[in-house]
Length: 286
Image 1 (spheres, rainbow, N blue to C red):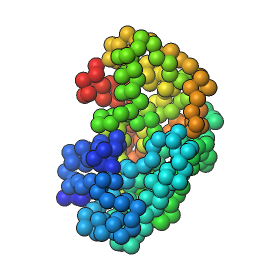
Image 2 (cartoon, rainbow, N blue to C red; image 1 turned 180 degrees about the horizontal axis):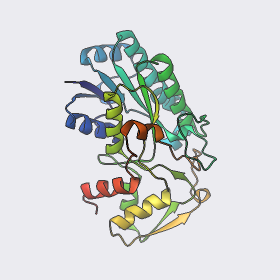
Image 3 (cartoon, rainbow, N blue to C red; image 1 turned 30 degrees about the vertical axis):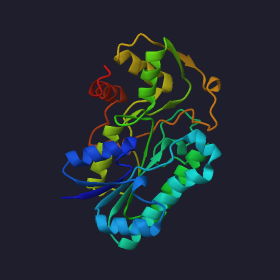
Image 4 (cartoon, helix red, strand yellow; image 1 turned 90 degrees about the vertical axis):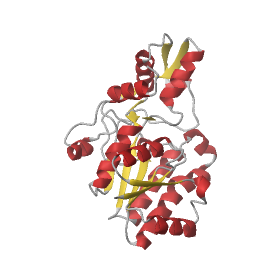
């Protein structure tokens, strides 16, 4: 039986999905979170990873609050760069184990209109994007032959608050909600991302991969689809990003090209509207 250690597996949006998928596929799964100890303590990490004897370590811990990262860059750097770097160094010292680390579409400036593949040059616009880029580079640099860096985007799924849930909650309180219409990305279902990440790990894949559901959408289109599928009468009003100011600048177009993943799977990742429908029905929202 393969052993997996999932950082963020108890509370994280993607981490919880990973635990469910791995267990369903017969893996022995252990979780590690900030409540278990100081994740930035190299001695603690060394002891924990030695004891776990994990075949694969999935790091789904990150500083994800992009706007707050602008005011707390050092704290964001600790989770987004220092932690994955420490994990890679520990696994390098142990001499075994694959590290799967998750990054973001926010490593791109997103000024074009063409989906971005793994060869695209990153140019992050925010502190969050910069720290995520530093994290993936640290992992690939420290553990090049035993690391898998997965960029994903616009996650929705069970277990924790996410954009889709917040939209539906807002619609229960109001008749009209305003959602940005001029930022386009790759909506992605955590259960799908977890499955494809697990398949990549089971296939001993390494390097940089883009993992997301097929298709693209604006935030407004994603919100409108969720509202429509749930039969809510709330009206979704499109607004430009300039009318919804954020401290962290967002890419205008950060759609991920997942052609490499499709070649590995032997088929295109399923479209995000299909995945969204499954999520809403599974959660009893539709």
